[in-house]
Image (tube, rainbow, N blue to C red):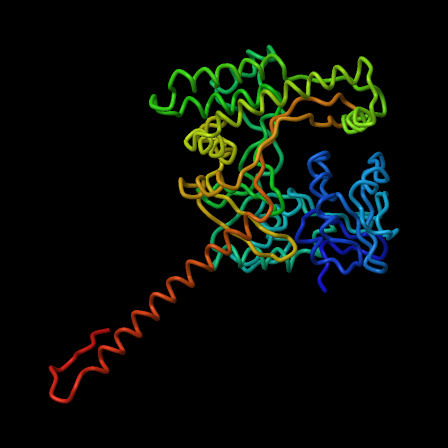
Length: 430
């Protein structure tokens, strides 16, 4: 059985999606594991692999040492199995797991190898990217993804990389109003990951890809731009009031919370569930209530399909943020690194509507790196299985076309069967 991200013996396989859990060769209750997976992805949205799997014994490790697994087991775990424990495992310690930027480099180089018929070294040069030794193991995978996305690769693909670029004056004004200075480099990351002529490609891995994640300035700017695109018929008094109230709340209430050294927001939430009541838990509880109020307002705001689609379009393309520059994307490549299936489409109204139906969002705390304070965050992601749903719809469409064609052919055959000798001559023109 193919296992996801197999690297070497031990707890070395990173697991991050429900479909990967279903494919594991293990005796643990997969339904309960998937329930835990949903919790971990919600509590730790930046953790790429919540579980480490050991194919030798079928065991799983929760890759968050501070997570109170014992308490979770008491309420949710029906099995007496000891195959679910905590620990980082050895995921990534040998060849390393592939993040999004790694895959971008591999896809760009593999595209150039296939389109230009050149060596890997030359393909990397053409892509203007950096090649790491660990990528060598994924060249065949990269080629398969390319061929699943482009039937006949042509031209040279470039890797935009993880640099920064300038934002529009309108977008920058929102940052200046909230933080008192221009947009920082961290918020000026391009939406374009790869480009091929005029095709500016945003690359997403299937498995709950994130469209947007930002603090107050990024959130206000995105919502403001989306709202500015709305016709007057949408901006009715009550709806406009909801929008203005939400924006004011985000500007005022989004911020950081100091939870102390060596602690995260998850630790505080766990202590709150255990009954701890002090100035810290009261402060966090108040902030969480404010988040819930803002999320309710956001739900009302995004209940209008036009508004939701405008937010999704901006999150996908960065049209308002980067204008018509190379940094704003106009094509989307979604791929599954395990199955190598992919979907490559132009970001048009049809795709935006489809993704808007699959999008989920939340206002919560995000852990800051390097021991920083957790901060309020607006997160928008695509539900797991978006690519699978897209492939299923394509398959369904093909089946319908085939069925319709078969019915037409059957009807024609029936009509021809009714013709008798001496009937008018029938001529077929191809």
